[in-house]
Structures are given as C-alpha cells and as structure tokens.
Amino acid sequence: MAKNPLVSDLNIKMAEGSIKKLQALERPQLFFENGKLVALLCAVNETL
Image 1 (cartoon, rainbow, N blue to C red):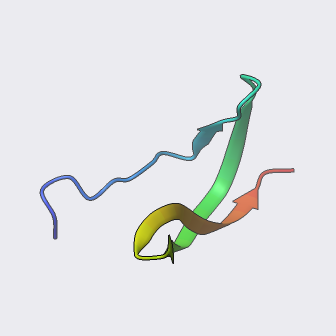
Image 2 (image 1 turned 135 degrees about the horizontal axis):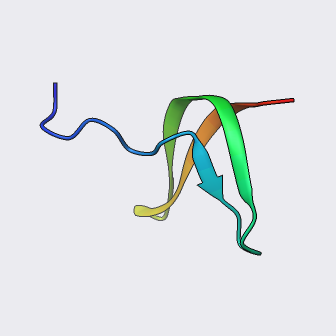
C-alpha cells in the first residue's frame, strides 16, 4: 500500500462552492488526450 493511499475524502467541493456528500467514490480512471493527462474520472454514489 502507498504511504498516503487516500486520494479524496467523501466531500467534493463543486466549482460554485457547494459541497457534495458522497456515500462512495470508486473505480478511478485516468483520461489521456494526445499523451497528456486530461482528467480523473470516478464512479460516485451520492447520499439522498
């Protein structure tokens, strides 16, 4: 296991400043375009 394996907690800050609380954040995928990293994509489960 990595020394610091946590990438993010389950609170995601949106661009306008609001906070989304998640139940799960999983299945990370890296998206590359022309050999350059463009985005980190994840599956999420939001709380109701």
